[in-house]
Image (cartoon, rainbow, N blue to C red; front, side, top):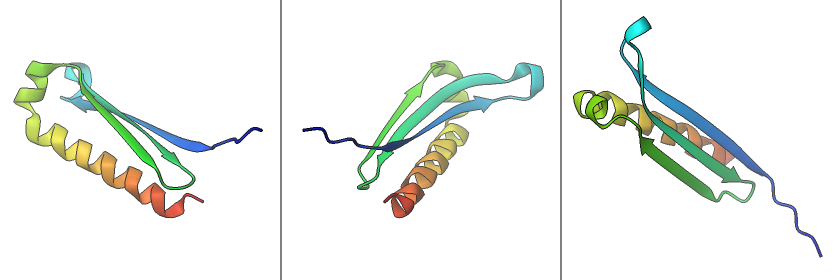
Length: 76
């Protein structure tokens, strides 16, 4: 017997700085299954840049999570 599950995957890179000074500080990825199960992973890639921009990075993580959880309402 086979049971096939479909998921939606979402990825985000979080940057700080402007133009040529832009740095990739963190990333996040998530999967949302059709039945509404959610898995979110976040990673800090540059600890010093994160510390210097913590408020901004955490705001971006929150925005990412809000987006992912909005997908649960549309998963079927």
